[in-house]
Amino acid sequence: MSALNPALQFRDFIQVLKDEDDLIEITKEVDPNLEVGAIMRKAYESKLPAPFFKNIKGASKDLFNILGCPAGLRNKKKGDHGRIAHHLGLDPKTTIKEIIDYLLECKNKKPLPPSSISASSAPCKAHVLSEEEIHLESLPTPYLHTSDGGNYLQTYGMWILQTPDKKWTNWSIARGMVVDDKHITGLVIKPQHIRQIADAWGAIGKGNKIPFALCFGVPPAAILVSSMPIPEGVSESDYVGAILGKPVPVVKCETNDLMVPATSEIVFEGTLSLTDTHAEGPFGEMHGYVFGGQGHPCPLYTVKAMTHRDNAILPVSNPGLCTDETHTLIGSLVATEAKELAIKSGLPVLDAFTPYEAQALWLVLKVDLKRLQALKTTPEEFSKKVGDIYFRTKVGFIIHEIVLVADDIDIFNFKEVFWAYVTRHTPVADQTAFDDVTSFPLAPFVSQSPRSKTMKGGKCVTNCIFRQQYERDFDYVTCSFEKGYSKELVDRINENWREYGYK
Image (cartoon, rainbow, N blue to C red; front, side):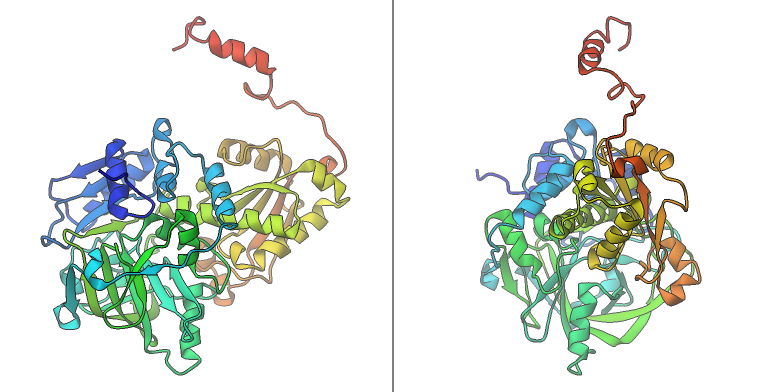
């Protein structure tokens, strides 16, 4: 029996979760109308095993089962970031800091482009449906949140688009709602790469005939990398190959020249039109709200072919209050790029993280005080420099507040971050505003305010480093068990804890 490869094979990923008691197979019939979504939210919020729905009301034999919460957090004893670690083929006990550093390390590896295989060898080609045979409205697509604008088929799949000159292929995640039997609509917004490629087609007069593929159950490493804000022009597929140490097997689409992961569970393909639109949304997004009745016209995808495996599985993410995939993947992967940008820019930053509790709106930077002091700078100058570096690049697009903390703070522990935030900065006085940069349209305080018309500003850098620390060491004792006493005393108390009468 060959070893499982959860980073490369989606079904191996499911088997690994099952082997670790991190999967619940739900054989009782469940309704895709809200019931699936509600079960997922309970699992996310309680860090329970991933639900695998094997009896969806309205499903056919092959279309489809649903895997929920594919990158949610789990019990700390099993490794709370274990599902994310498995996306990369890492030990399930790998911490999020180690995951970020591993992704940075992989960027120094040689890129490995995908390898093409024949359709007869590709599992995703087990069933091939023509446009006439496709009926999207008959699929058991989940309706995830009360007041969503429709049924969202695409929450954890991967869009594939390619520039007209075929020099850049982009793999990305963006939501997609079923419109009717042949159409999907979804966000294609600037400055996201999916929009840049679509605009390249528009520039040559083909903005209504843009080839696309939408793939579900792709290699977990691929879906993870498709969440990363990697540089424009870089093809995610090559970076995935570097992570895996082997090329991703791909196969040609039925109706266009795009290449898709050969082991995909389900593949939709067709054309995207920027000129034909349909009302999309609202949808319960990463910040935890559904603003009822607030849909927007979005570009229309026409599905012209569909291929799928036997007993196909649809992975689903159900965004909301932390912590789900929009935080564990999108937020954490922004942090990976943020750390790399700090290194390239020469900033005295030790680590970067987007705390889950801040719904991916904060970026926290842990600053090396010795290096900071060597810069001979002020809080105002440093905050301005940091904001100019991040808010004017794609890395900072979803971020609205950058929080600077000293190197005594564990930025992966929100309790410590928030303590530093409320005790080490003076509101307004220690915040540097950036009113000329692009706002993130999904941030609730942007979408629900007049700022939605200008899409500018609403971002700041908050300095939570004492002013004295910019010049010299500054003595203080942290009044906590772990940091307020000697290691010797802490260890002795831990050893004697049960003798004191505690359990």
